[in-house]
Amino acid sequence: MKEAEYRILENREIARGVFRMLLGGDSSEIRAPGQFVNLHIPGSFLRRPISVCDWEEGKITLIYKVVGHGTEELSRREAGEILRALTGLGNGYMLSKIPPRPVLCGGGVGVPPLYGLCRKLVQLGKHPHVLLGFRSKEDVFYEEEFRALKVPVELTTEDGSYGKKGFVTELLEEKCYALCCGPEPMLRALYDRTEDGQFSFEERMGCGFGACMGCSRRTKDGWKRVCTEGPVFFREEIVW
Image (cartoon, rainbow, N blue to C red; front, side, top):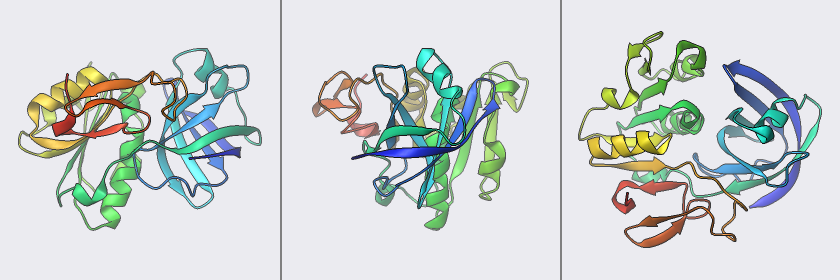
């Protein structure tokens, strides 16, 4: 974990209420897909945890949805402005445990960390299959970025305005190894349709580094903090 200043290189809307922010600065603390940063937003008391979409030396890509005052204020930040952030937070996806042909399943703002994960898996010679779910056509983002990785991609929208009508969970084949990220109802449905995998949970957080215990959830091994022991958990750990 490290706190540093980052210069905004880009902050633009890429889907309805969804923004991509590119930060310039030290990315060395980010070591695994699924980790997150905690941004200090001017005018907000609490930092905002945002999952890392992708990273490279000197750059971090974040994708976030405007859902309240803090993210609304963040969407107004412009290129050239400086933000402070804690980086390298949480445990991400454990790449060494992933089989050759995993299924990546994301819904809404659970999609971003799966892009960085997908890119890493392709680099490792694995063959991921990507399933993405959104509410409507106006909410779809990063389809082309996934397709550029030369992996199969399937999309659903709840209203049928783009891709297949329905929920992304309906595309999942049973007995696959699933790498999932999205809202808890989606994760629970995926849990019931899989036998193995890794699940990334979204939780409200206070500190983001384990001190406040506000994001704890029960597992088969006792209570664990989403911000430190998570946000990614193995399927066999999860208790609903």
